[in-house]
Image 1 (cartoon, rainbow, N blue to C red):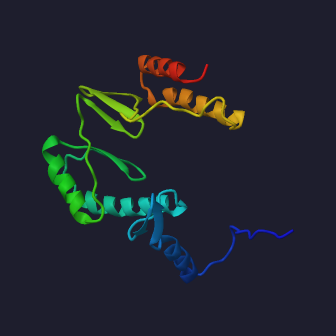
Image 2: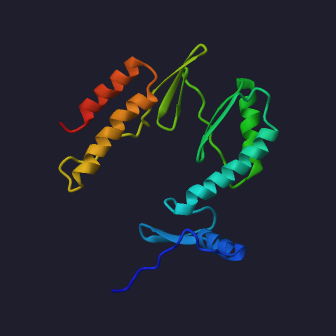
Image 3: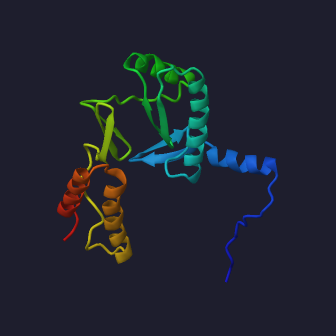
Length: 193
């Protein structure tokens, strides 16, 4: 029986070996979509383990450049990988994001502004009422409520895990008893009985 290679945590790599491995994993790649083959020249593949690391490095560099020239009205900069939520005066929004998008032409950040005192960030809907913020679960308009099918051949522990995670998310994301109840009622409607 042939043993598979094992990477040991205490393996010693020189800086040039490490840089070679990183460079190789960031090399441009090819992918197919339908009948066409594409050559990706910039960025990393979605799903590649190094993609998250690269996104964090790029966003940290962007943040350092931005915050040195940020308007004084910037009250919040919250980031999760490549998603950012900010709070700043409305007069500073356009110049600030024009500045962000001028830093790296290949990296263009889109803006989603507060609408009707609400703003989604990741899977959280933030609702502003004066100086008070309330949160609830957010689902994109394209969300279909399709979950892991109860009759699928996935292990039962995976099926239970989906239910447990969604149920617990109500406690973690929702800031009011009413929004927790609304989220749990929604789950009771869409989860298999």
